[in-house]
Structure formats: C-alpha cells, structure tokens
Image (cartoon, rainbow, N blue to C red):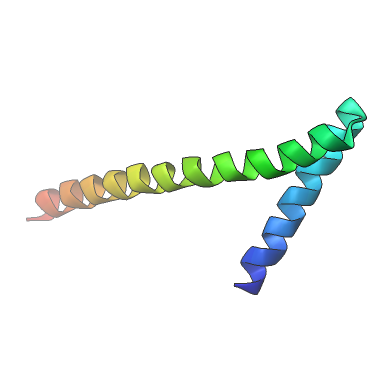
Length: 67
C-alpha cells in the first residue's frame, strides 16, 4: 500500500507540474492533478475487466488446442 501511495503522490506531482509549466496557472494545475488521475483510475478498472476477459479467452483457446 505504501508503494501505491508514493506512486499516487508522484502522479499528482507530475500532473500538476506539467500543467503548471504549460499554463502558468496553479488552479488549472491543481484541477488537472485531481481530475486526470481520477479518470485514469476509472479507465484502468475497465481496462482490467477487458484484459481479464482476453486472458480467459486466450487460455480457453490454448486448452482446446491441447485437448
């Protein structure tokens, strides 16, 4: 869990810094630092669901080939 928290802090920091450097706005940098990781988390959830389905189908095909 500590690794996850440190990665989240790094992610927020990078998002804020890049946006701040591009816009010069701490407000926009802060907003992006909060919004982008939140959206990324939702996208990751659905990516994992699709990936698990893909892996299951792949395993099923391998099982059928060896049976």
